[in-house]
Image (cartoon, rainbow, N blue to C red; front, side, top):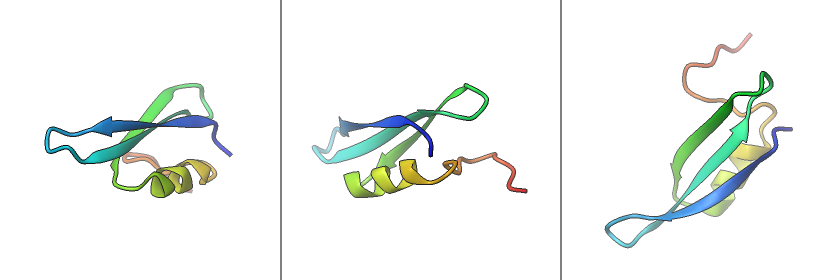
Length: 58
């Protein structure tokens, strides 16, 4: 399981979205932004490993 953190961010409209930051298996810091619910961000972080744009799935 990837280790990382979920951070709230407030948009100009006043809405709150959540960003995820984690380190991939090769040690690079990655992020995924704009989850509308904290639960969705937590679920994304719990994927093993998190799927991010540009990743190749074998």
